[in-house]
Image (tube, rainbow, N blue to C red; front, top):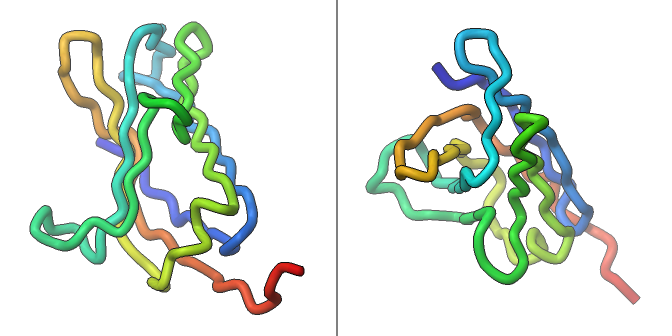
Length: 119
């Protein structure tokens, strides 16, 4: 079962959060695993996607630290500037090299919108 966490974002500011991956209470080496995280308006798959983050691609926002069994969520402030929504539902799933998924974190995201414009 995935852990539940409320994540709070300050729009325009960097957000980092580290998740320790445990299976049955034991640390597992997740080297060569990948990660993906989506935010939707609610928990239904039919709800529009508000944001997507991945450990793949040119500038990943999820970092899988295999031997340490950690997944680092590392979202830049610039990533959040276009967010016009106040809250959503997310989950973070990691994938074995075989493609087998494991949902490790889920919950609500709240966004505190920026008021001060940059110079």
